[in-house]
Image (cartoon, protein in one colour):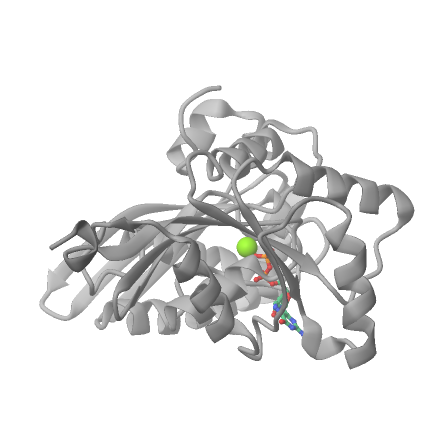
Length: 303
Ligand SMILES: Nc1nc2c(ncn2[C@@H]2O[C@H](COP(=O)(O)OP(=O)(O)O)[C@@H](O)[C@H]2O)c(=O)[nH]1
Ligand SMILES: [Mg+2]
């Protein structure tokens, strides 16, 4: 009897790529339920998060990372540290690009640079192929083949689910034999507290425009089960300026109420209990430059 009779195919697989290419969408699709927040705006994902895909004979532990990009604030630096550290020690990387977007010349160089900087074996996923004419795919594959040595190049649509089963097959084929790292029924390593904060942040991303989402952080101040099946959550929405606070609260508190209702429904679904969600908005100037505060948000301590 050899080791293969006991073990499953298992390992760590990173989802990496520029912002807005569909990494979180793919994570949710692969897991079969929503664990990562998604929005049409770039830089929605801020910290590294794990998602677990369980199947017959395999367990894929996915690492969702903030998009690779350049930025100057401490928050941006921390996001990039989270992205690159998510790549340390992975068995495989899935590098996502938005196949239907034609990047500007300088951007393309940056993109190729990221692809080459990944030291792990890498599968290139040409995502959003649902938006692409069929005959546009081959030239793209030809282009990327010369950029670096990918273990595979696959056109997919994370949103529609096209090619996703093939991605799982490709990943499993590349993984070593090992233990199941997580119990079968745990789809993510993130706590309900953290996920609740993320859901509130997603609603802010979806409901406010311009700079507001980027200036916003959400802290769960308390999360208590008052009685079986009933949870009360106090959440603090932190922004950088009074004007942003006014936008989030809205006329007569309308916007905040809307955000609260959307978030509450989704949190109730996630935890399977009734939720009383109380939202507070506070101005904290330059929080994105404050390392201690970023630690409270879940970024690991100092570089
Ligand atoms: N048309 C299309 N849109 C997609 C696809 N995958 C993701 N998106 C959209 O792209 C946006 C960014 O997705 P998200 O998963 O947050 O990207 P991330 O920043 O890489 O995590 C969202 O509006 C998604 O709905 C896809 O395969 N096709
Ligand atoms: Mg994301």
